[in-house]
Image (cartoon, rainbow, N blue to C red; front, side):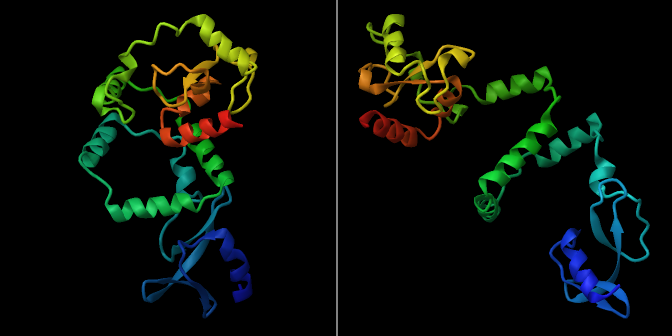
Length: 233
């Protein structure tokens, strides 16, 4: 194999970011400050390639294909859980993760979300796990906790007829995505733009589908400014 051939193939091979060269008709990779002889292996299942040390015994499949479909035993899961308890990422690690995510395009983010979603399909949490999540997200432990404002009573004028008037004003469509109420699973929500339940001025209310109403729980200042500009048009 010539050096030109290696240069053409190497972009398709997982090198771990290391340099590759040809010496004495052998492929070498730079590990630290040392060049080591390696062999090129192609997975018989997915076609993914990688370089491996000479003399090692490898199966014809890459690690991804070997581990695909495997499930950890309950004992292994317990050990992994215990080994991760109390661990927190350093500020440097958090910064690296933030920079890595910031460099992704919207298309790459969408692909990544789909991969994560597909990987989690079919999984079921145990009742104990569900109970632990529920307790951890109650009251002040929840990042969206606002001191119990959800238990406050609405003003007298907050009636079904009044909310229906707001939906009618907005053409029975979500004012973010434009989805018609007829195509939604539930009625459109009437959202308070300034998050004040007692302010039921029509200029402070807007119709949203369930998906976008849920999104307004976070980034409140952003959504407040967004809806105020929308109502001012």
